[in-house]
Image (cartoon, rainbow, N blue to C red; front, side):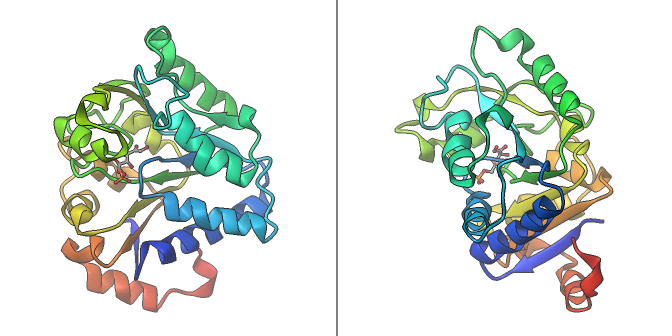
Length: 260
Ligand code: F6R
């Protein structure tokens, strides 16, 4: 079962996760971080920036994004290439050559998935993958029904996800319908998964992912197949968890040597 850590606020969660990543990077400067986009990981990126200002050197870090919209020019401010550059590459001083985002261009679409998988393999995979969860239960953009063995490929977003993501655009019409996303099989290869969720709106999907039956209808439940998963959430997102007293008990008795 995943380790579930419930903290008071998203900023607390961001500092907690960033402190862990910074320790890992100090021990291994060539660390590979899997980055998510959307609003959930922003407190982690802010806290990583603070770790960088406090002296952790991230310049040799490699980053792989989870997904990209199809057909949105890379220079569009909401392309995930732009978001990753703005929130991660520039503030942490990463080498842009080590920052990978799937190719969402229409011209490259036939080979985008295979090229991304080859880049991941050539890099030796991902050490720690940050994940958010959609209200449909998606990880990356693996909407319900995605195979647990799936690799990076084109997917069609649900209307629910397009409506949720319309807040980043001027109107719903501008939200692309297609994306290139790491598959659930790709995500499961990362050596450590860190799933973040904040707010009441995520409580139901989070509980289904962490405690519900393992099913392709709830892509988030794929985390139950992974040997090393840390779930870091605020109290609102934790509100539907059946075993939250146990998670709290485990936290209260967590030995210093245990790490995450
Ligand atoms: C983003 C991603 C998605 C988001 C999810 C939650 O790269 O792959 O799975 O993590 O849609 O989005 P937010 O964080 O905006 O609620």
